[in-house]
Length: 305
Image (tube, rainbow, N blue to C red; front, top):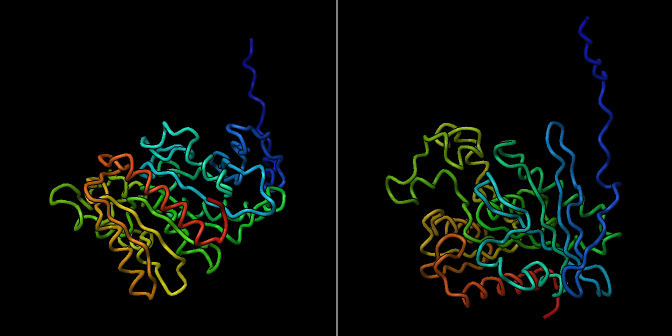
């Protein structure tokens, strides 16, 4: 009896499909007035999983609607694209459905995590998502010239970094919730002994592909404060003063850099608020959301009350 040799692999893999030409997912209707297209493919990376985006769309819009792109947190290491955090999981309707009812399209994309690729892969993915939204705008009823980026924690970092590094006019505004903004300064901003910039196992090191103290150029390049300039879009920056994971000083640093470049960012520090808005009363959490929606309205001239 002889062994059967395995079939040879084809010499070339077929080219991946163009995400701009793929059929869109069948829409669901999670609540009245909202269509949800879950898991549309926006990018196919070599050697990586397809990247997908959820789209929450208002059903009764009279014309193209402004877009809010929400970027999830999770230390660049984990997270779900449609999860705003534990303080919002009980909301009915949820925060994205509410935004759609308010006249916005909401895009919630995946991006490559630090276990899959290091910086700048994550912002490359968000840039690809913005490009994909533009190519599909007519079919989805989107006005992508009016786009606000919004992220929480690591997602806020990526939203800010994307907003500040894309060509001027790509983004109409950016909202960050308790986001790191200056990676080289984290050791200074955190309580003494709680952060080691030479540690290769921190979330920041895993994002950069090495300890921040050793990858200083990458740490600077991955910091939103590095990229602040005269063309920066409007910013709303929210952070709790009791945040033990990302010090509020990180948000202050971003606001200071924007002011030095001639901008007037909105900075609100919530007394005693911890990461993920832990420790805040419900009314303060609801106010953070309401301020975010109001900011998106001002930046885009769209939406409804």
